[in-house]
Length: 564
Image (cartoon, rainbow, N blue to C red; front, side):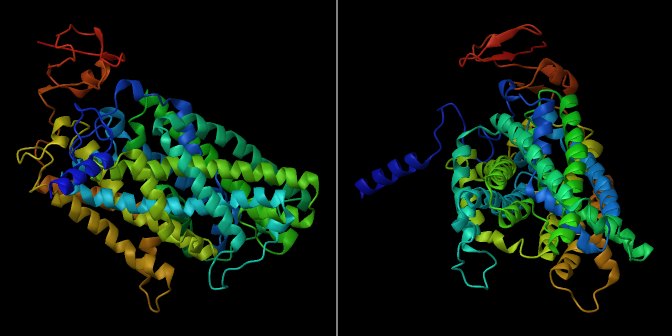
């Protein structure tokens, strides 16, 4: 028995996350949940431009705009709707950046602020599930980049016989590309999330070059944009308006998980001004150019090939089918490489690491961000992402479903942080289970936020079910609520939560701690926080005067402040 106990202890120690003895590894507090230290705040304008540009410079975004043509809108109407959608994305994302940018806390800790210390599991669970689903769907698209690359190397691979049954929505050729893409992604999990910024920016650059190449070549071959560009809208004015809203919902839905956990990355910012400029510039520029190219290419390919090709990888494969020459093969290889690179950098950072951050907060003794990302990747197979893209209707439903669930969480976060608490948090209360703590609420749950989230989410679920499988006699009002959930699922919960908090005020609203150790805050951030007493406990155990600098045992420079 003694041997078995000792063996189990050794196994347990082996499975634990390596850490310094001084570091706490609990669900409440661990290095992955603590505020980000000064030396890790390295994201400026270009890092945020890359992070918010890469979701738009992908196969996913190119095909999103094209798929919207099935709603009955023409290209001009679709682009108008997407522009409005981009504006809302900027507003929601910038507002939701607040807690991370000021207090350097991630999404997992932010959920404690709104749902309570124990209730935070609701938001964490939702984001973990979405990370898994999104990781799988993006991996499938990334695998198509490998399909193009391998097809440019071998005509036999391009024409590979499908050994899967016809009932399966994928071919042997596509599955090989998906498998290779999935395996290759694991190599990037050894990096820290904030260190991915250079890889993201590089993939942005080569992918936009590839997309421009596909766009120019397609329109040049067709001698124009094709018939869809000048096609009138045959819908009634009222229905056209709802299709504008639905297009905005679809467009926003594709990025809604990234808007939701924005604090995971806003905490890496070196400057809030640079962060906001990077977000707005990336969303408005890349979020307009890329879908426009996708729409025009879909129109041109309809005239060229008799069908709309709404994946850029399909256009590249069509080049090889038409002419398997050295020039076509070289162009296809470069485009496939670029599409694969953008999908991989986006997927690893926005979904793999995002899922890893949340899982690290659930079981920190055994899971850190790297291990959590690997778990996310492994579980993504269960989503069977090849089923997401077999028709444009499924594609649209998948994208629009995300926003229905997570947008109320964004709304509650914005309402609680900016309106109720006015950007002032007792930071240490986010890491305690004391019943007197600000975020303990009622036995660890904030029923105001839970009730508001349910009220904001449930009205959109019947419309989502109708979109998946049309229901006879379905109420038009509920369908329209789903179409406009990009607006309704944000503003309705935001207003409801503010009203509830006015009737049932939250504890310590707008309060700051009188005394707190600001180990990871700069002088400017301490000043902004509004605290009256700065009681700093230095590693050397020495009190220092305002503005002086000390080095910790790792040699990194930190600013320490004291006011007596």
